[in-house]
Structures are given as structure tokens and as C-alpha cells.
Image (cartoon, rainbow, N blue to C red):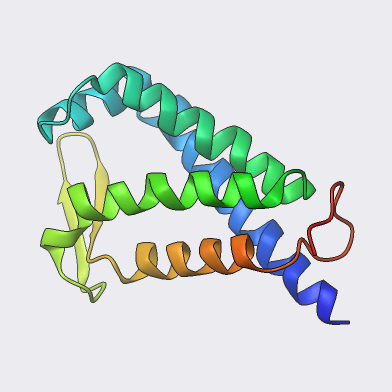
Length: 139
């Protein structure tokens, strides 16, 4: 039964990353995501956008399937840690509300407790086993 807990965690974390890639690719679109990254003052926003989309999309799918789980988890954890350091850290820990951008009709959460929990879950997946029903099992 313990393998199923790892499976549920792995698949859920993977699905969250796939959805993040979907948002960056189809909702804000690569141009919008790159524009946001450029406003942060980070170098090569187009490259970083593609990196985030590929790591979250392909890595998330790999987590859902249980394929090269540790590699996919570590890659996503690194991308998310960079996100915490560059975007979320200044907002503080508690998820205390949302900033609403009425011009585009979008709300952005303020606080990084959710992202921190996602990093912890991702690292737990990387350090643990792949669980049941994984294509490639890590012990």
C-alpha cells in the first residue's frame, strides 16, 4: 500500500506542472510569459520561457507516467526554486490574497506558501520511490 501514496503524490505533482506549462503556453502565451520574465530583469527571457514550458510540460508528464521520476522532479524543483527567489519571495510566506489586474482580467496570488509546498512535494518525490504503476521504478 505504501507505493500508492508515492504514486498519488507523483501523479498529482506532475499534473500541476503540466497545467503550469499549459498556462504558460496557451493562456499567457510564450510572448506574455517572456514579457513577464523580462520585467523581472532576468536574462534571456525567451530561452527561460521555453525552458519553463519544456521542464514543466515534459517533466510533469514524466512524473505523471513515472518515467525518469527523479530527473523530472529535480528539474522541476530547480525551476520552481528560481521562481520563488525571483518572483514570490518578496510577497511573503502566507497566501494572503490576490492581486487583480483588471486590464487583463487576471488574479495573481500573493504569497509563496503554495509554491513552497509544491517544491517540498517535488523534492519528496525526487528523494522517494516512484511508487506503483510507474514506467521506470526508482527504489
